[in-house]
Length: 208
Figure: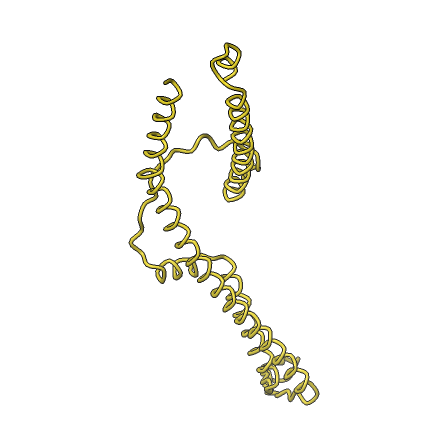
């Protein structure tokens, strides 16, 4: 445009329009660079690598279609989510501690056996059986058991909330995959051919 304008073949508005287009492309390029840096940082975080480690140029490959439905994906996520495993372990531990606290209220039976050998006397043997009655610790063990029951219930509720969040995350991810796949298909089959056609027409008209 500057060359045509300098020779008198083009107008000033052509130069201004070209500059506006270049500025718009520069802004779009800056936004894309920022998005790419964010994507690289997220990929490195998922791989437990430094945030600025190069990942290489991505290859445009079609996403494989999965035959699993949303329910099967949710089941796999529930089985593989480490937070759920930790919550189940906490619930099991609290339940076990509550059971042990309740058992401490029961009497304990103890037994012992001994044998004596005195000089000049025949050997003697004996045995003893004793029972301990927890008179003063019954209420305290009851409070401990109730506290562990509440802790187990809290862990179960946290696990339920986590499973609900997993259901949402899986369903939202499936919708995003389907939406992006449709967008890619539209870009490849409709947008790009129309853009190439428009570019060729524009070049032909500009040359004319």
